[in-house]
Image (cartoon, rainbow, N blue to C red; front, side, top):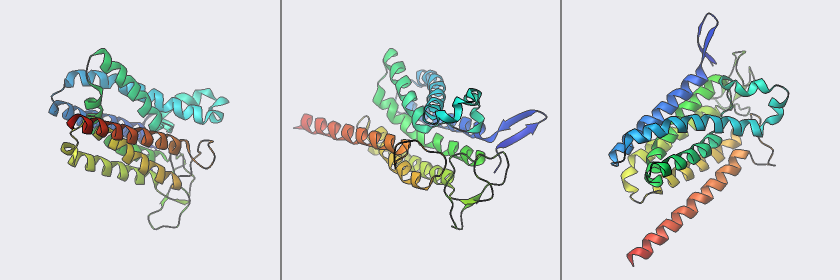
Length: 255
C-alpha cells in the first residue's frame, strides 16, 4: 500500500489524511443535500458541520489515545501525528453527536431530523476513511490464507510486513458503502424522525462487531471483547430502545 500519496521534496501528503478529508467532505455533501430536501436550513447545517468535523477529529483521537495510553506515555509527541492513523470512529461519532446536539439547541433546530440526514453521510464518510486506513496499514487484520488476503510491503506501513492478512479495512469500507446504499435507497420509508438515524446505528454496530473478529491490530483491554464491540453493544441497545419507545408513543397517539 501507499502511506504517502505524494512526496515533493520534504513535503509529504499522506494517503490516510487525504481519504479522511474526502470522507468528511462526502458526508457533509450528502447530508447537506438531504437537509435541503427535508426543508431545513442547509447554511446552518454547514456552519455546524465545521465544528462537528473539528470535534469528531479531537474525539476520535482522544478515544484512541486513552485506550492505548501505554503506547503514547513515553512519547507524547506521537499523539499529534494523525497521519499515522489512530482515529477511532466511535470516539469521533460520540463527540460529534454531542457537539451537534449543543449547536442545534443553540440555533433551535430539531435534532432528530438533522440526525436522520447525517445518518446518510456518516457511513459514506466512513467508507472513504477506511480506504485511507488500508493505504496507511492501520486497523489491519489477522493472518489468513484466503485468496483475497492483502500483503503489506511498504516499510512505512503500520501493518506487519510480508504476511497475508485479512483486508479488514476493505471489509469495513464495503460494509459502510452497503449501509449507505441501503439507507439512501430506503430513506423515504423512514417517516418518523429518528428512525433512519437509529437504524444506521444498529446496522453499523452489527457490522463493526462482526468485523472486529478479523482484526489483529492492538485492541483495548476489555477481556475477550474489543472496546468497539462494547460501544457497539451499548449503542445498539440505545437505538433499539429508542425505536421501541417511539413506536409505542406513535401507536398510543393513534388509538
